[in-house]
Image 1: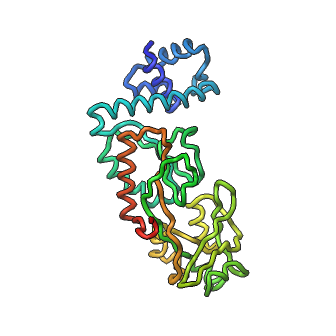
Image 2: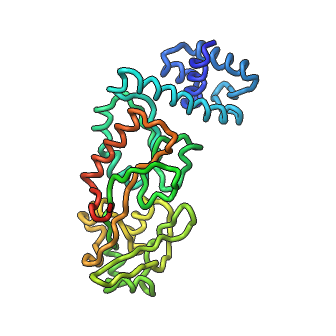
Image 3: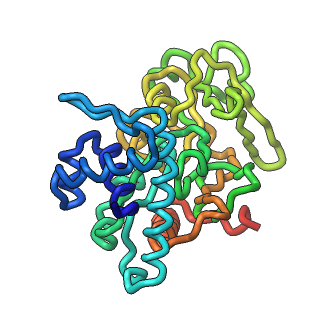
Length: 308
């Protein structure tokens, strides 16, 4: 038994949920894939998969083994890529986690150009606003707004998100137009709260107008922990929003949102790509980071003064 082939066959069965699909993607016969997995189970003396006539499920031991195998196969692929002519044509699986609005409005629409340039990179895009453990979840890098508080990560600043306050016309018709940000702290005005995934607290915002500076927490009737839901709530008239300009732009153009306090300035939110320091910066990870940095330079360039 070739242990590498057996581990690769097992991993592909887990990922596809089917011996037939795994065999097709590996360009092997179904019988060969089945035999490789059976031989691997015999060597390990543990059942990795539960098989029925309709489906294949990974066992608890199989799930734990898969996580280790996945990392090993990725490291082997990185080693081959970095030491061969393939370095000029990056290939392999790349796991990235990004905020939901950034994925929907910026990254995914731009991805056809990346795919055309790097057709051998398989991009697994996790779309979430939650904090993830890059090591435990075997993620190559994350894109996150705000300061990177995890000092164990290597972070590259790729943009600064300019932001402002916005509200739906329906909200303003019902509640009235606030004349000062401090009015959002008292009835009848309210915000849509955005919850930090780390502590479940609503994020406050700082605004400045000349020498006057104010931090607004705001009263909220609804708070959410997902960027797309946050935006949808504001468009539905459920409260005032703090939004990066790239998120607000299409809704301003359509008339679904109105800008508030345009003469007040908010500190730009830094945008970072972060990855573990012990994670080899493979060719595929390097080209992705360079590509997304170039993309964000067009959408939200780094503020020279803020970056100092």
